[in-house]
Length: 444
Image: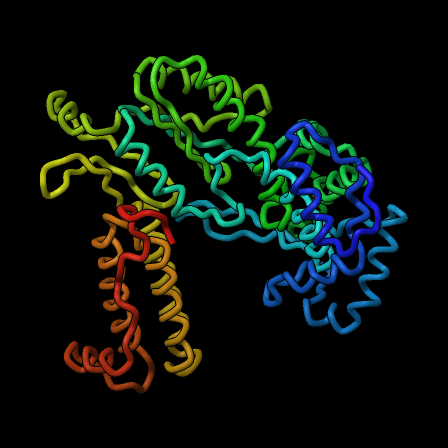
């Protein structure tokens, strides 16, 4: 596909989006030329200027001091096919009490080009992606995924959940198969080769350069888009076209990035879907986690069946919440949800460690603003229907930890609960509240 000079790059992106929407079989042959100075300047301005620097040690502000000169040199290297992404700086962040998650911090120039490629791909694939996918997409978020899951279980004949966890997804995505999927829509070899360079760029871990044969770099701007493209073909379209045509009853999938659950009516269908998922992912070089993936009964009859079978009713975790079968005040079935034990414990530990560390570093009035932001952030995510007790519990624990560590500051008079309560009245903290109601149309 060749473009005449019709104006700005954003107009061209709009044209790309239109072509992709009107013709699902349309193949794009000329895209890399969109990475011009004007476009990459917008990409630079769209970056988070406070993010950590990569191994190049260049900050957003430093790069911007000679922005035009730097971008012209960058575009020149891209046109001459001499641009090589700099390996990411690998760091590790806590995943749980015992595990750490690897994260790649890209060099600033990498981020600019990645942002540019991501916007191009977004304009193509947003027309293809299915409604079951919610992760890292414009105007879509985790709370919409949670509401959709709630509505499916509440209003469809759901009796089973197939809970799936892809083992080491981001580290094991096949480069060859991913590029094969992308070539269905994109025939621009320059852009495809550039993406392949990012996949092969590798990372520096404790001074050693590692060049992976598989995986998408976690922490990079491009990675979520590549993951969505891969799972669109491997999971979403397969489920929509193949699975749904081979089951007897209702079934649906809700996916957020590599985290997904299937809701199913019949037990036989649930068992077949579970087997099908394992075979499907094995075909593409991935596997479901043997202990974290399971098929359980769940729905409006689960509590009664569990009582008859003398067992606890089943629960499952999704997006940081434990879902369980509950009853409304009128005795009707409803989906209950609470902050998962794993997430709650991790949040409490993190808050305690932060309060302990910060109490003597700076004046209270300075870190108090951060504490307010932390509490607001917690309520913003976990403040969903049925989870008021969960966020209220976190608030109470935070208050207790706050008083404990404020009383351990050096040369400060200890505060009784009465005095501490008056202090909080003078310097109030955000109170727990439900931010996202799943019982009204739309989720904020």
